[in-house]
Image (cartoon, rainbow, N blue to C red; front, top):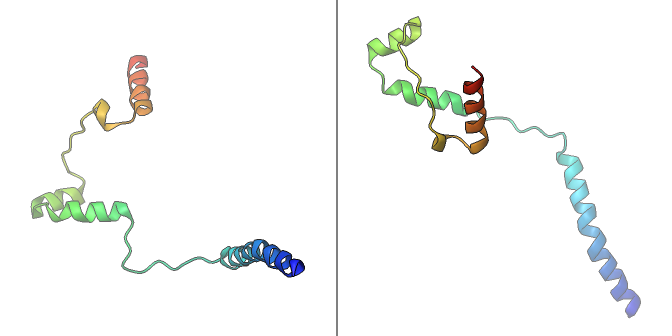
Amino acid sequence: MSVAVICIVIAGIMVPGIVLEANQKSEHDHVAKVPKSYLPSGSVMAKEASVNLKLSEKLSLIDGQWDSTTDDAASYEMDEQDYQAVATCRKKA
């Protein structure tokens, strides 16, 4: 009876590892196909932004004549390391 219990305990320890290893090996080289409806996040953002533009703004964007301004990011918009890196670069310039 104790031999049967020991065999069950050993099987309970070994079998899950063997099953996980077999799953890992079978899925290691598997690459899932991306659905055609998938858009990378940058494309989604550009698509969403262009919906709000007027036709004249879209044309100027396509022509490369878009007037844009950049604002410096505030300290709360960056993590501390990025903010310190920007501050250091500005001091050196």
